[in-house]
Length: 225
Image (cartoon, rainbow, N blue to C red; front, side, top):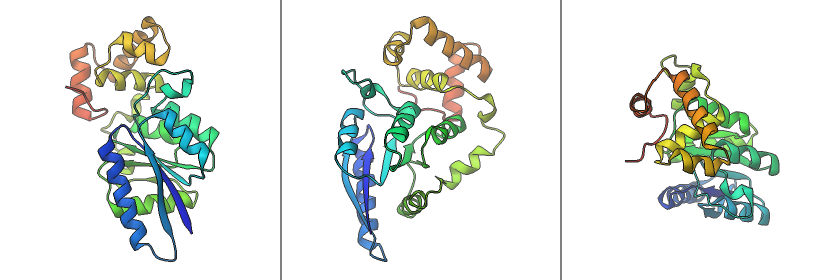
């Protein structure tokens, strides 16, 4: 049995690390199973080219890609929006999201969008193999530490941020201004600001300083410094 695997992430080091781990799995695989990394990319546009050109059984998809504006609206998608689009376009490809975020809202929304698995960047070869086998069996795989966080009451799970609110907070943490975010999401500055304010209200913070302190403490997103 041959399993075709594609890797998409904004960081070259992450892509090559996952590819190396998969190649190690293939070398030690039993029962005639072989894992073939058929490509890797950091952009949604190239990802679509790779998906349309060959069969892909498992896609390891980073939560953030290097988006850019082109004639194709898909070139600007990442996060849950891209997961949802890919799950509809390529239903036979099992999507395993590779994410640094332990935000329970993001985990839930990613799975609801169509991902079959969710793992962190701390995963090891054993967990990687388990994730591949599980999603190929049409089951959902969530790394155990992340699964535990879904049921912990001291997380922000009960706040139920919307997908747009999560996107705005994630982009703010990456250093984007409200104007830049409005351009990426094709929304007005006023709408983006409203998403930010609603998220702040749900999280119980009243200033930007309190917001960033909370995000840093809970590790919802990577904060660019």
